[in-house]
Image 1 (cartoon, rainbow, N blue to C red):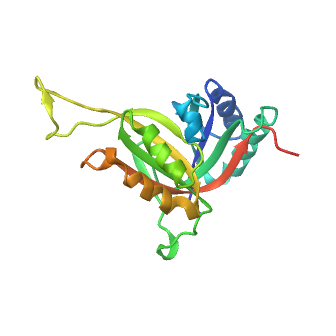
Image 2: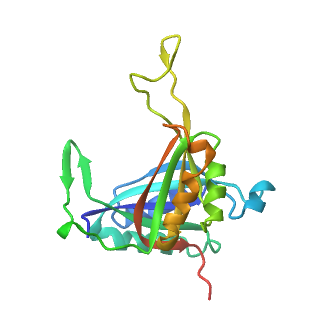
Image 3: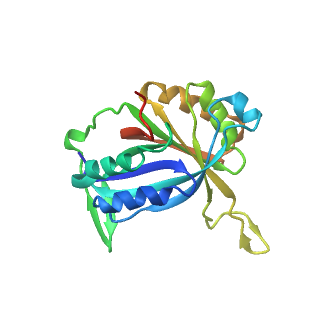
Length: 218
Protein backbone atom coordinates (compact mmCIF):
# COMPACT_ATOMS: atom_id res chain seq x y z
CA UNK A 1 0.00 0.00 0.00
CA UNK A 2 1.31 3.45 -0.88
CA UNK A 3 2.00 6.13 1.71
CA UNK A 4 -0.12 8.63 -0.20
CA UNK A 5 -3.21 8.52 -2.37
CA UNK A 6 -4.73 10.95 -4.86
CA UNK A 7 -8.47 11.25 -4.27
CA UNK A 8 -10.37 12.36 -7.36
CA UNK A 9 -13.99 13.53 -7.14
CA UNK A 10 -16.16 14.54 -10.08
CA UNK A 11 -19.36 16.41 -9.18
CA UNK A 12 -21.61 19.11 -10.69
CA UNK A 13 -20.06 22.56 -11.07
CA UNK A 14 -19.98 24.75 -7.93
CA UNK A 15 -20.46 21.73 -5.64
CA UNK A 16 -16.79 20.97 -5.22
CA UNK A 17 -16.44 23.24 -2.19
CA UNK A 18 -18.90 21.05 -0.29
CA UNK A 19 -16.62 18.05 -0.77
CA UNK A 20 -13.39 19.87 0.08
CA UNK A 21 -14.93 21.29 3.28
CA UNK A 22 -15.91 17.78 4.41
CA UNK A 23 -12.49 16.42 3.45
CA UNK A 24 -10.60 19.15 5.35
CA UNK A 25 -12.71 18.50 8.46
CA UNK A 26 -11.67 14.83 8.24
CA UNK A 27 -7.95 15.54 8.00
CA UNK A 28 -7.24 16.53 4.39
CA UNK A 29 -4.95 19.54 3.98
CA UNK A 30 -6.82 20.88 0.97
CA UNK A 31 -7.35 20.22 -2.69
CA UNK A 32 -7.42 21.62 -6.20
CA UNK A 33 -10.70 22.20 -8.05
CA UNK A 34 -10.60 22.08 -11.86
CA UNK A 35 -13.45 22.86 -14.21
CA UNK A 36 -14.40 19.98 -16.45
CA UNK A 37 -17.08 19.01 -18.93
CA UNK A 38 -19.13 15.86 -18.45
CA UNK A 39 -19.98 14.00 -21.65
CA UNK A 40 -23.19 12.17 -22.50
CA UNK A 41 -23.22 8.46 -21.70
CA UNK A 42 -24.50 7.45 -25.15
CA UNK A 43 -23.56 8.49 -28.67
CA UNK A 44 -27.20 9.31 -29.46
CA UNK A 45 -27.44 11.71 -26.52
CA UNK A 46 -24.18 13.34 -27.60
CA UNK A 47 -25.47 13.85 -31.15
CA UNK A 48 -28.66 15.42 -29.77
CA UNK A 49 -26.66 17.69 -27.47
CA UNK A 50 -28.13 16.08 -24.35
CA UNK A 51 -26.38 14.98 -21.19
CA UNK A 52 -23.40 17.34 -21.39
CA UNK A 53 -22.79 19.18 -18.11
CA UNK A 54 -20.20 21.38 -16.43
CA UNK A 55 -18.25 19.57 -13.70
CA UNK A 56 -15.94 20.28 -10.78
CA UNK A 57 -13.00 17.87 -10.75
CA UNK A 58 -11.34 17.86 -7.31
CA UNK A 59 -7.82 16.52 -6.76
CA UNK A 60 -6.86 15.90 -3.10
CA UNK A 61 -3.52 14.36 -2.11
CA UNK A 62 -3.97 12.58 1.23
CA UNK A 63 -1.96 10.54 3.70
CA UNK A 64 -2.97 6.90 3.40
CA UNK A 65 -3.57 6.77 7.17
CA UNK A 66 -6.44 9.26 6.83
CA UNK A 67 -7.75 8.17 3.42
CA UNK A 68 -10.71 6.11 4.60
CA UNK A 69 -11.83 8.78 7.09
CA UNK A 70 -11.77 11.37 4.30
CA UNK A 71 -13.66 9.09 1.89
CA UNK A 72 -16.31 8.42 4.54
CA UNK A 73 -16.67 12.15 5.22
CA UNK A 74 -17.16 12.93 1.52
CA UNK A 75 -19.70 10.12 1.08
CA UNK A 76 -21.66 11.24 4.16
CA UNK A 77 -21.64 14.88 2.97
CA UNK A 78 -23.37 13.87 -0.27
CA UNK A 79 -25.95 11.37 1.02
CA UNK A 80 -28.78 13.88 0.58
CA UNK A 81 -27.82 14.67 -3.01
CA UNK A 82 -29.56 12.93 -5.90
CA UNK A 83 -28.47 9.44 -6.91
CA UNK A 84 -25.36 9.34 -9.15
CA UNK A 85 -24.53 12.87 -7.99
CA UNK A 86 -20.87 12.25 -8.75
CA UNK A 87 -17.91 9.88 -8.55
CA UNK A 88 -15.09 9.41 -6.09
CA UNK A 89 -12.03 7.21 -6.54
CA UNK A 90 -8.40 7.05 -5.48
CA UNK A 91 -5.10 6.43 -7.25
CA UNK A 92 -1.91 5.29 -5.51
CA UNK A 93 0.91 7.86 -5.40
CA UNK A 94 4.43 6.45 -5.09
CA UNK A 95 6.31 9.76 -4.93
CA UNK A 96 5.43 13.19 -3.58
CA UNK A 97 7.37 16.44 -3.37
CA UNK A 98 6.60 18.85 -0.56
CA UNK A 99 8.73 21.92 0.28
CA UNK A 100 11.53 20.59 -1.89
CA UNK A 101 11.66 17.11 -0.33
CA UNK A 102 10.68 14.14 -2.48
CA UNK A 103 9.23 11.11 -0.71
CA UNK A 104 9.28 7.91 -2.74
CA UNK A 105 7.93 4.43 -2.18
CA UNK A 106 9.29 1.30 -3.82
CA UNK A 107 6.82 -1.49 -4.63
CA UNK A 108 7.57 -4.79 -2.90
CA UNK A 109 8.73 -7.50 -5.29
CA UNK A 110 8.17 -5.19 -8.26
CA UNK A 111 4.48 -6.17 -8.48
CA UNK A 112 1.22 -4.43 -7.61
CA UNK A 113 -2.20 -5.93 -7.11
CA UNK A 114 -4.47 -5.76 -10.14
CA UNK A 115 -7.28 -3.22 -9.74
CA UNK A 116 -10.95 -3.74 -10.54
CA UNK A 117 -11.12 -0.45 -12.45
CA UNK A 118 -8.70 1.76 -14.33
CA UNK A 119 -8.51 5.48 -15.01
CA UNK A 120 -7.72 6.14 -18.66
CA UNK A 121 -6.35 9.64 -19.23
CA UNK A 122 -6.21 10.88 -22.83
CA UNK A 123 -4.52 14.18 -23.72
CA UNK A 124 -5.24 15.36 -27.25
CA UNK A 125 -5.73 18.49 -29.31
CA UNK A 126 -8.73 20.63 -28.49
CA UNK A 127 -11.91 19.59 -30.26
CA UNK A 128 -11.23 15.84 -30.40
CA UNK A 129 -12.22 14.70 -26.91
CA UNK A 130 -15.78 13.96 -28.09
CA UNK A 131 -14.41 11.74 -30.87
CA UNK A 132 -12.26 9.85 -28.37
CA UNK A 133 -15.23 9.44 -26.01
CA UNK A 134 -17.43 8.13 -28.83
CA UNK A 135 -14.80 5.52 -29.68
CA UNK A 136 -14.47 4.60 -26.00
CA UNK A 137 -18.25 4.11 -25.68
CA UNK A 138 -18.26 1.75 -28.64
CA UNK A 139 -15.65 -0.32 -26.79
CA UNK A 140 -17.73 -0.51 -23.63
CA UNK A 141 -16.94 2.65 -21.64
CA UNK A 142 -19.65 4.74 -20.01
CA UNK A 143 -19.26 8.51 -19.66
CA UNK A 144 -16.19 10.69 -19.32
CA UNK A 145 -15.05 14.10 -18.15
CA UNK A 146 -13.09 16.65 -20.19
CA UNK A 147 -10.69 19.19 -18.69
CA UNK A 148 -9.32 22.07 -20.76
CA UNK A 149 -5.52 22.20 -20.88
CA UNK A 150 -2.64 23.44 -23.02
CA UNK A 151 0.55 21.96 -24.35
CA UNK A 152 4.00 23.15 -23.28
CA UNK A 153 6.37 24.53 -25.88
CA UNK A 154 9.72 22.93 -26.75
CA UNK A 155 12.72 24.46 -28.45
CA UNK A 156 11.83 22.84 -31.79
CA UNK A 157 8.12 23.79 -31.73
CA UNK A 158 6.80 25.84 -34.59
CA UNK A 159 7.09 29.60 -34.09
CA UNK A 160 4.97 32.48 -35.36
CA UNK A 161 6.70 35.87 -35.41
CA UNK A 162 9.26 34.41 -32.99
CA UNK A 163 6.64 33.25 -30.46
CA UNK A 164 6.10 29.57 -29.65
CA UNK A 165 2.73 28.24 -30.77
CA UNK A 166 1.34 26.27 -27.82
CA UNK A 167 -1.76 24.37 -28.97
CA UNK A 168 -4.80 24.11 -26.73
CA UNK A 169 -5.44 20.63 -25.42
CA UNK A 170 -8.22 18.61 -23.83
CA UNK A 171 -7.69 16.00 -21.13
CA UNK A 172 -10.29 13.22 -21.15
CA UNK A 173 -10.78 11.14 -17.98
CA UNK A 174 -12.57 7.79 -18.28
CA UNK A 175 -12.99 5.20 -15.51
CA UNK A 176 -13.57 1.71 -16.90
CA UNK A 177 -13.73 -1.85 -15.60
CA UNK A 178 -10.30 -3.46 -15.84
CA UNK A 179 -11.38 -6.08 -18.38
CA UNK A 180 -12.49 -3.34 -20.79
CA UNK A 181 -9.33 -1.25 -20.56
CA UNK A 182 -7.49 -2.81 -23.50
CA UNK A 183 -10.49 -2.59 -25.83
CA UNK A 184 -11.06 1.08 -24.95
CA UNK A 185 -7.39 1.95 -25.46
CA UNK A 186 -7.34 0.14 -28.81
CA UNK A 187 -10.46 2.02 -29.96
CA UNK A 188 -8.93 5.38 -29.02
CA UNK A 189 -5.57 4.51 -30.60
CA UNK A 190 -7.21 3.85 -33.97
CA UNK A 191 -8.77 7.32 -34.21
CA UNK A 192 -7.77 9.27 -37.31
CA UNK A 193 -7.13 12.40 -35.22
CA UNK A 194 -4.36 10.57 -33.29
CA UNK A 195 -2.42 9.21 -36.23
CA UNK A 196 0.03 12.11 -36.53
CA UNK A 197 3.06 12.12 -34.19
CA UNK A 198 2.52 14.42 -31.21
CA UNK A 199 -1.27 14.60 -31.66
CA UNK A 200 -2.03 12.96 -28.32
CA UNK A 201 -1.12 10.50 -25.59
CA UNK A 202 -3.02 8.15 -23.30
CA UNK A 203 -2.03 6.47 -20.05
CA UNK A 204 -3.71 4.31 -17.40
CA UNK A 205 -3.73 4.19 -13.60
CA UNK A 206 -5.27 1.55 -11.36
CA UNK A 207 -8.27 2.87 -9.40
CA UNK A 208 -9.14 2.12 -5.76
CA UNK A 209 -12.16 2.99 -3.64
CA UNK A 210 -14.50 3.73 -6.56
CA UNK A 211 -17.76 5.15 -5.15
CA UNK A 212 -20.84 6.76 -6.65
CA UNK A 213 -21.80 9.82 -4.61
CA UNK A 214 -25.35 10.82 -3.71
CA UNK A 215 -28.39 8.92 -2.50
CA UNK A 216 -27.97 5.18 -2.33
CA UNK A 217 -30.55 2.93 -3.98
CA UNK A 218 -32.58 0.91 -1.50
